[in-house]
Amino acid sequence: MKIKLLAVGTKMPAWVTTGINEYTKRMPREMSVEIIELPIGPRGKGADLKRAIKKEGDAMLAAIPSGDWVVALEVTGKTWSTEQLAGQMESWQLKGRNLSLLIGGPDGLDPRCSALADQKWSLSALTLPHPMVRILLSEQLYRAWSVIQGHPYHK
Image (cartoon, rainbow, N blue to C red; front, side, top):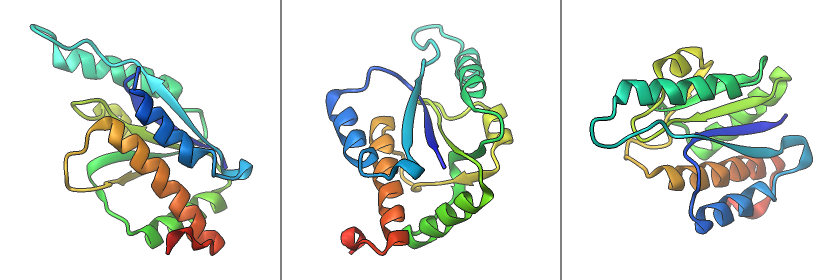
């Protein structure tokens, strides 16, 4: 199973790339993780926020491969413990499909992306900065995989 993190926003600081790479390189080839950065919609004085979110949604929808199991990261989604995430990961593997995890921009996901999702997952009720979400998500995927493998990393 290939896992794609489709994330709105480019040009992340080096510490973000370093953090993501630290965990994605630990994942086995049969469960590789790839981050795909999508351009952020125009924001600023007088910008049309709905248009910006739609532009982000257009890019995200175009980047989701056909046949992927789609999970939208949403504050209103279900929360999972690490063990529950490991169970979800096993379930995703059994589906025999690749996985696309959707991370929206500063104002959330385009409603079309949320509607397309097979599942909605909330990392936290807290508002998290998008760069931090990428690292946290990468680490939790590795941790869930380590639980499945019985690897001591989780302890």
